[in-house]
Image (cartoon, rainbow, N blue to C red; front, top):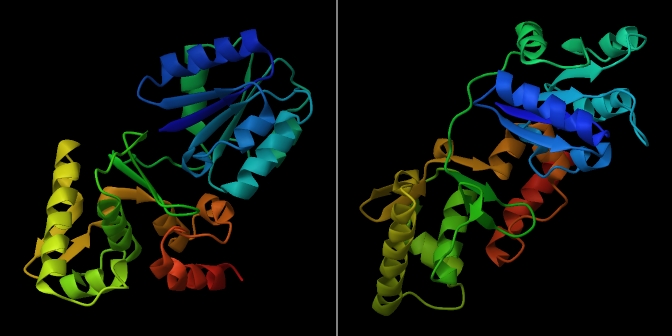
Length: 264
């Protein structure tokens, strides 16, 4: 479970965060003292639950809740406040709970019984792929190192094809568009496949690839990918798309045009 905690008072933020972590020891908890920073959180589309103070400078918790729901409609909101006067307003934005400070482990657990949107168990995906803007790959949220730039490009092409089987000739024509097919080129391609397998094996993620004679594909369900979330109409992913897709690769232009049509 991914949880966000927002309070502009540092001491209150620390106390609230500690109570949430004690109640939800397996959750990934991110804390923010500024509502604007919470809205700019790069993994906002993956947040299941937000604990928000209401009286904050600049943007109060009610406004923040509305903005969060606009971005990711199924986020659960629990207000953590020292005032009772906002209760009606809180439920007007379909909050899951309204708990009074000082927040305790017990009050957090009690509020968890009444979540507006059930939280499904999250899959532990080792690989996270960013396709919007430039193509980047993260393993356990750390950038994955590729010894060869073409190895990274090979993985990018497989991700773009979204599980479709890709033939050796298809891939070489895409990533070496200025070269004609030859035994030397096919040998170079085989070395790339081997290098990709070794790179993934090093982080125990080789199972994201499926190989058959003459073909290779990615297993979409085994990675987290903004493009896949976008296609599945995830509001956060749609909001994060800015008209650029794998910008460093010319062969990605047609897919980018397809994504632009989906939002037009």
